[in-house]
Image (tube, rainbow, N blue to C red):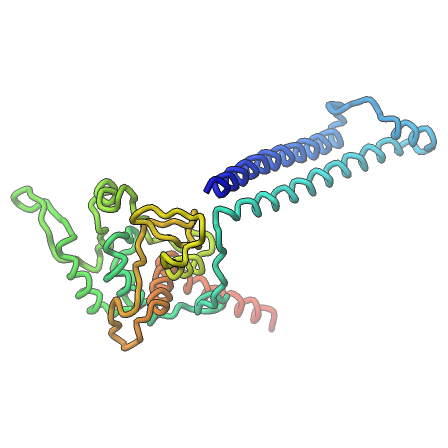
Length: 322
């Protein structure tokens, strides 16, 4: 365990060192480039320095009046390229060092909506909403998604009215004529209510950890859909945990999660819910559907953007013909 902690300590220090050197080299490169431009345009001798032995020898054997300036310009260019190349190398090293925070990179999956002209699988969005409603909504909120956004996407208006009305114990409204707040059935104009009234209540119910809102979770995680899918399916049994990894009581080992230890228990398993369309509710199917739904939540306008792109390409193609 000491070796594991020592390795993490060394990696953290390497990250800090590479970050500082990257900033230093980038600032130095910017400084030389800016001064070169200023000196070129305004003939400002801010960087006037004593010529080196090599430059004196070259100038001594040259006959052209502009040779000395050309040599200095070449020197500045060489220094700029060297500093820029070193900065790019250090940046790449810094990114590779940061990989220890993400122990296992998720594989790339072929999502139905990942192509430039591909659309969402709306049947999967519908099933994914049911997964969220029956499983994820116990802890996670969707603060930025109103019920009405799902109309004509995964549900009809009548279906959405019935679903919204099921949240009657969670919708608080008022005040009424007596000045009191009251509970009412949900409407399609309401936003999907959160499971907890505030963050303090969420933390108290989850051992001090506040479950993140899922409205933008796909865009907010590196790896997007691939990461969410791999993380939900990446829980490891106690017998398969690597040697030297200590898991506290109530925590779980997940190689895709940052730090590899996650407090959330495995939320999905086979037949945790039953789909109304008869699709087998295996864990991978449940995960695929809820990730598709959360991807739509993060970018509900994606299909419109792609449609406008198609119209734009057609317009460009036809505008060149008489």
